[in-house]
Length: 370
Image 1 (tube, rainbow, N blue to C red):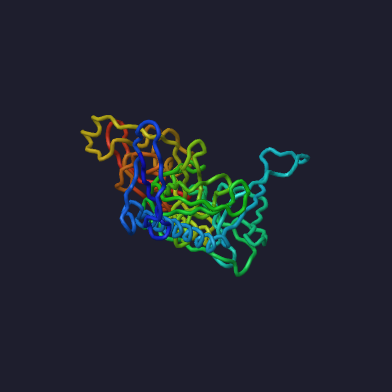
Image 2: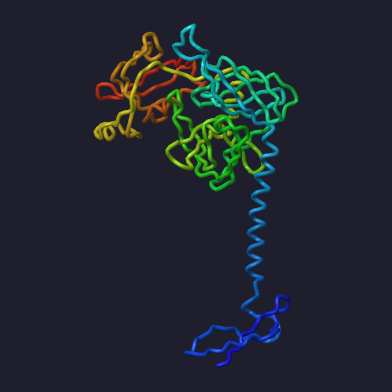
């Protein structure tokens, strides 16, 4: 049997010649296409090629965004080398340990934002820019409660970055992290904003509110570096990574960072109130909730009082359960920490406490937390 199989021209798709195949044994089914003059409908690759072109264009747009942001921001990113005094070191022992971190410049005269845990307790700080210039730096202010700090480098006319508005962020938005992981200078990772409004426990024990979760890879040494959006604005300060997990990285939101950084530059600290109690969160018995018509299911039970502290002077006692602070429900230690802000220092505030099965209003004057 003589079979004719068309060969298609590379240029026009028309049939140029035929090849004969002779089956000498058993019949064989051969799948073939029969073409008229012109282009075959089955060989038209234009839709596929168009898809490839569109995907390549999208990928190229993403690449251009990351490259553009990196070029704008990297000159303002600082590699910080920090020497800290080693605890318990004897005079004959070597000097303190050295560590590295990241930061970013927010003013042309050298104010640099970084993490508190990067520079806290530093004896010597050295900042290196992408172009190789090196400056000595000193700590201007440190706030362990939010893991933020500001250092000042002795430089002029330095490249800077600006804070964006983290309250406008949306989940899925591009997030780009620039820093110095493991001492490797100016590494760039890109991802998205994975979640908003997270909370994170700082080394001081307080909760940091409004934390950004991202899957832009962070590693030790990225701490203090900027997390930026597609316009190069700082949307967060990289602060922590959960090492056993993948893609769980966190940054202090820029709106909180702006407030704290302003306080650190002007005053060197963020003022917070305290009442001088050791306490724990406890659930409230249902009978109290119904009888006293409380709008909270938990309270803060005082375990101990600081001698001469604001709570002791206000006649608060161990065993009292704080349920309201200036009319706001107090169902956790973190809620009390948040309520004791700068505005409460030295000002009488009203507390409602449970004592001996009844509600009692107390007045306390918070002091300033040192």
